[in-house]
Image (cartoon, rainbow, N blue to C red; front, top):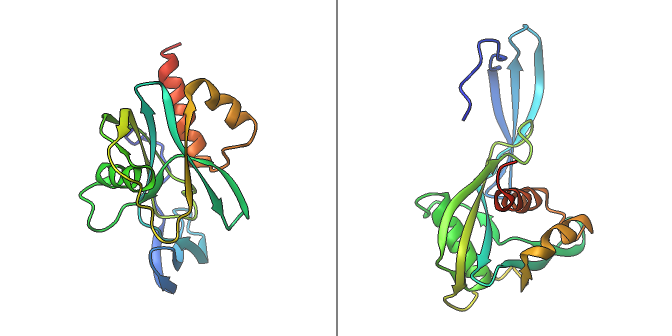
Length: 191
């Protein structure tokens, strides 16, 4: 992380906080009354609290990316995604959660793991971060065991097809697109 710069903006002061709804992990909404460093106040600033999220760009030895397709009710549509989920309280860290999600959703595991990038979906309105991992050389190590609320289809996609899939709008989850693009940039190397 970049160290603070001398002229960085200062944090806001929280004068009051109350929760409007608490139905973790998917719907926690708080309302803060804040004072900005300028002295201005915002009496009603809403923040959605979520647990940390994880995403996995999983690549097989045959240079295929393990993608899933699933229906997303918010959009009412089916698209390609990378295996993903939330960090549970039982997970030791985000990588543990990412390994668990990859195995549960696809049956793939193993390989060499590294952190790809850490992002916020919306730092102005959400409290969580999303951790993306690269898993290279993954292979089938078990049967997929998706949660009862998940209806997934696993697709092995040649790396050469990723950019065209993204350009065609077949991957619409912004955090997943970012992880895939970061992977493609890493493959391309410096310059």
